[in-house]
Structures are given as structure tokens and as C-alpha cells.
Length: 95
Length: 404
Image 1: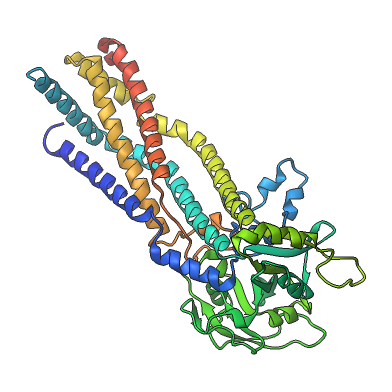
Image 2 (image 1 turned 60 degrees about the horizontal axis):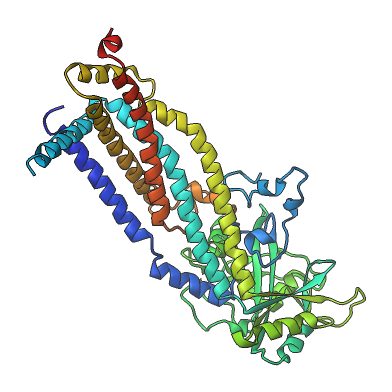
């Protein structure tokens, strides 16, 4: 392969890698504005949430682990059935 | 020095040839990059959400009470009689006790799940930028601040009236939405309904009870107060069903509990990804070289014109590295675009049950360097193994045999 083809390939890869590095450098630390809003909200409500669900529709513990000590779906008859709760397992639909 | 120059020139020439090989087989290169991106993108995006969620969970612990007191009956959490507020406040070392009600309600024709949070309104600030509209006024009844996701789902805005959504023999009243939480708050605000503790008690038709008490205690006295509360014979007067015992959760306990749940979810997510990865592995190996007749022919031709096996392997290595680094970088950029400008469309609902596919509330995310470095390493190993293996096999075979 002659001409500028190889140089273009290298340039594209370097540009992609540079872009990715910039994105990671920018997005790795928590944004101060977002952190301040999150803290202000939790200060207002006295600390609520913390679980992987945004409602208490299936179990209160998934919304806020402090609200309950067990999930009803943990008693599923399937071995390790608790893991198949929609809140315990990423990616499976809950209905 | 003189020997180093030709060596460097040879390496550069081989690297250049490897970069050229990327363009020599554009379809193979595009398919290889697409396969690697398809494997890495969901994993990077999922872990970024897990990191963002963990940050918000830590805030929930940090701004929660020093000690959380709940009742216990039959070994399960039970409401706390409000008489316990005075009892616990009288314990030495206790600075403050705040009752609150937390429970699930259903709203609207579709029975949309919401979390009702009742707090003493005199504890809320006079104004806040977290809410469009205002907070419920002290003394006012049935004034609600609703989450952004809930407001959109039920078409609620400031000033909207909610017909009675609960049953109470003492009477049911129309509620007024006085505020809507901003959309850039933690995900748990999306379906939250904030109101006075009195209104929450009316909604649940449970007078004189709280879901929990938040106790403020200086760190030095925390353990003593915790033990003192746990030793209380009962949290309130006997209602005929026996005493309500106390269960106490310290901030430290909650600090271990909350991120652990997010971490568990992160682990399960990674497990899923590993399964998907195992399925996708042969695909990447095939597209990057294994079993491709054209790579065998190309290698044989290079050998026939005088290239050594090392040269051919170095050329394939350069090609693989360029493809792998390019694919990993592209996956990182696409993950950032998916989570940022596209607001995790489709992914938020998968990772956080209850978040609508077109999330109103911002899905938290943080692209940490470790998963990105791991993703790059995986991409390099995947692409390199596929191409180097096939190249080495082709290079070890006499060219005449391959080209026959």
C-alpha cells in the first residue's frame, strides 16, 4: 500500500484515541454541579433512595435498602431465584 | 547507532504496511471494528451508569440520619409510634429526632407507582432551586411536590389538582401540586412525592405512626445511643398486639449496605456481559483473521517475495493494534454520546427499573478510566489473537502450498 492511505489510517486511530482520552479525562471525575445538586436534594429529603430501582413497585429494598431487610422475591423457589429479581439482575425485563 | 537506524526504518516500514493492510481489506476491518464495538459498548455504558449510581447512593447515605430507627414486629420492619420521638429525644447524647413516612402509592388511571415521603414541613428550607414552583407550606395540607418523571407521566404541573387517590374513612381530599422536582436530581427523585408528614399519615390512614425516625447524634455518642435505643422495652404504648421493639441502623451500616447493592448489580451486569462476550468471541476471532483464505494468500505472497515470518507477524500485529485501539476508542466515544447527549436512551430503563425508556430524570453516569483501560486491553487481545494466529499458521506453511 503506497500513498497517504497508511498515514490517514494512523491519523484516524490517533484522533479516535485522543478523543476517547479527552472524554475519559472529562467524564471520570464527578461533575461538581451534579454532585452539589445531588447533595442538596438528599439534604432536603433527609437521605432517600440508594437502591437500583426508582420506585417501590416490586420491593421497598430495591428503592432504598434501609426501608426493608429482605426482598419478597428472594424467596423464589428456583435455586438462586433472588438473582432473577428484575432489580437484582441487570438487563432482564420485570414483566 | 548505525544499526539502530535501519532497524527503526524497518519497523516503521512494517508499521506502515500494517496500516495499509487496514485499507487493503476495508470490509474485514469494518466488520472487526463493529464486532469489537458491539461487545464493548454496552459494558462500558453499563459500568458508567453503575459508577454514577454509586456516587448518588453515597450521597443518600451521607445526608441520611446518623441513626435510623424503625420498629420491629414478627421479625420484620414495622411503623414507629410517634411517642418514641420524645422517648428517644430524652436519651443523653441525642441532638434531634425527625420522624418521616415513606411508602408506596398508586396514582392515575394507570396506577403509576410513586413513593410518598412525608416529612415535618418546619424542617424544610423556605426556598430551594431543586423545585420548580415551591415546597409545601408549613401548616398547609395536601400540598405535594412531585418528581419530574411522575409529572410527565401524569401530565402534572404546578397548580394541578389531584383527585383523592387514597382511601380514608375520615375523609378524602383533593391534593394540589405546588412544585415539580428538577430533572437533574438523583434518580430516586423521579417518582417521589414530597409532602407533610400529616398529609402522608392521612393518605395511608395511619395516624400517630412514622415509617422511621432519623436520629442526630454526635459521632462520639453514637454507639451508646444506639445501644440505649435498642434496649428500650418498647417504642410506644401497648396497642394490644405486644411491644414494638426498635431496630437501629447507623450511618456506617447504611454506608456498607447501599454501595454493596449497587456493586452486586454491577457484578451481575458484568456477568451478563461476560456471557455475551463468550458468545461474541468466536465472531471477532473469525472476522479478525481465523479461517480467512485471503489472509493466507496474502501471507503466502509476502513470503514468496522475500518477507520473513517475523516481518509478516509484525505487519499483522500493527494492523491488529490499529484496529483494536480504534475500535476501543470508538466504543468509548459512542458510550459517552449514548449516555450524554442521547441521555442513555434505552439503556437507562434496562439498568434502572422504573426509569422510562426516554428518561425524564437524568441517568447518572461516570466513565472511569479502569473499565476503559480494561476494554482497550480486551480489544487488543481479541483482535490480535485472531489475526496473529491465522497469520502465523499461514506464514509457517510453504507459500507454494498455500498458493497452489
